[in-house]
Image (cartoon, rainbow, N blue to C red; front, side, top):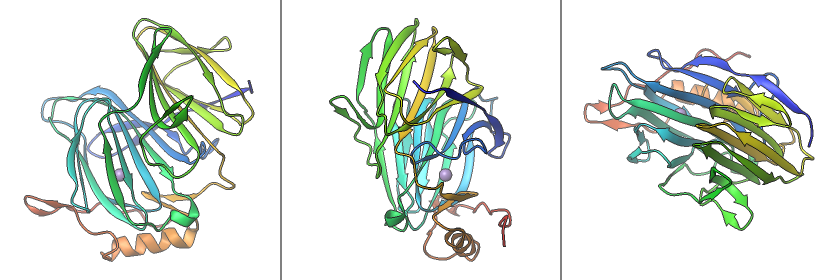
Length: 293
Ligand code: MN
């Protein structure tokens, strides 16, 4: 196995005091395969009257991948989808040329624990039609004290139902009483793992939820010892030739594509649509000025 690079997480504010820990992108590691964004939200118990409320915002050229561990979140988008995601489920929203969505805690004062990921679309699909899919069930198996959930890609004979567009892997590993995993890796993939709770030990080194661990391509197996009550998110994929461009909620294969998306959003262009609410149209979040000219 290759040497593991430790990447410290940083805090990010989603607004209204909702803090998350961001693993990707980092200046030390931009992507893992097509995975280009990873926020770890919670675990948190909101104060009475408080919850997560993310207003209407756009995305382009990516898929948002929500893995819910605790709590309930209401998703609404500009395609007219409206549904509640619950623990053990995945929402996969394909932005393509443009989509808008809102995310709200169902019950204020409740709990939340989630991983919010983005998957960069390959260049030929960057402007595809937007789409939304909800996956209430994923392949689950148990081995040596660890529950494995296949979130994306294939492992052994199993294939996750989530519709992704490049060779990749996503897996959740949970151990209530402690256990061991011995995973076969694809030597063509790069990998990363993030403990979401508890601790994990790999090759005599301990990792906690404060760090993202990155493994460059070439490794054939990964042996992990999970502490009691631990959960680890494992990501993998074929490395991209070059990192995609990212700014605010936009992904693009050029700065021009992102600048155009930002102009279109600011001008209310029809490529994005609106999220409708009982009161009319959800107010839109606005991006800071572009960091480049
Ligand atoms: Mn979003």
